[in-house]
Image 1 (cartoon, rainbow, N blue to C red):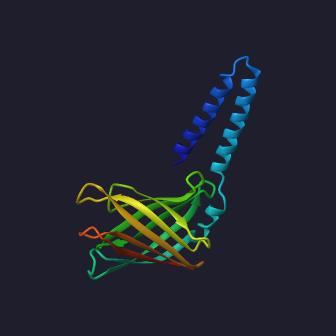
Image 2: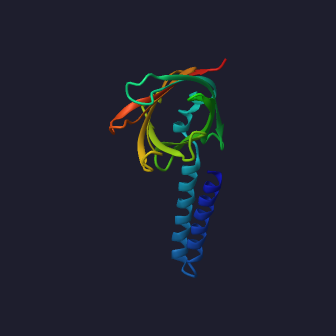
Image 3: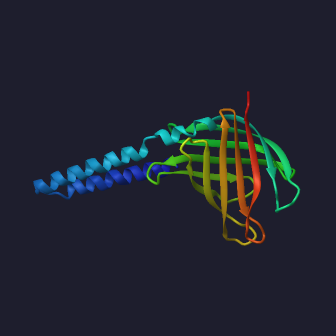
Length: 204
């Protein structure tokens, strides 16, 4: 992500520089291009600066004990496991990095996720990867006005079909020390069902 952002920034500067150079001896054109360059850099600065939407993610920072409940199919007995999630700000409070360790289906399970707010898209964005697969789940979402409920839509690869499938997640913040993530995915009949719930309790 850092390399991508740096590349995009360099590209914006190069475009602005090319526009200024193209003015030649035409003073009016040069002045207009100077204004365009200024507007471009102001837009870039606005897009790059964390704001109130990023502050909404602050309650998720810290170390958390987790209780994970998983339903492999609708109506199936749930599997319950425990884990620990360490969440921290990175890149100047632009993204939260989540590192998770626990168990899944009797085996060690680790995962890494990133969540932030895209000032250009005006949406929350996320990515997730773990030791149970080789693909990355990407998501976009919104928050309610109080910042207590966040809803994301995502896509992830289905190993059975080899195609992408939709996923929905909802994060509910009860207080500074408790939050919950719920996930829905397609059942074998294609209907969405709740297949996972993670309860987070801040480690004291």
